[in-house]
Image (cartoon, rainbow, N blue to C red; front, side, top):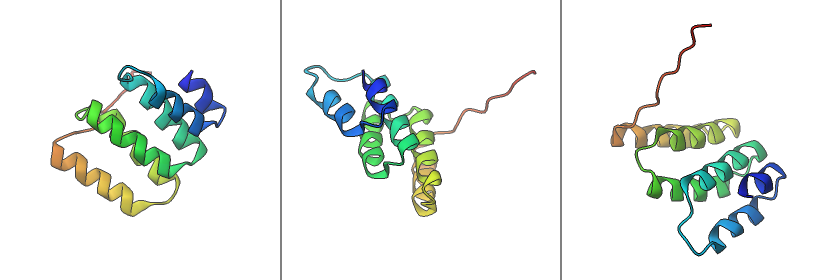
Length: 101
């Protein structure tokens, strides 16, 4: 449901849905919302969502990369550098992907 609301651009409603759940939300719900924040350019909500992700999955590079892409799309290069610094300080590295095609 969070993904559907996010794709529709209803980011605040998606955030409220996650917050209203009586159990701790899965990281996947937060990732779906962070991805929607990137697509729709909502930087401020993206920072809040990333904060939750960093608490739930502090060593998962995907969360940092999504936030980096969100900042880069908005030309907020100082924030990109800050997140890269957090990654370096925590020893988190983006996994390199390759294709045989």
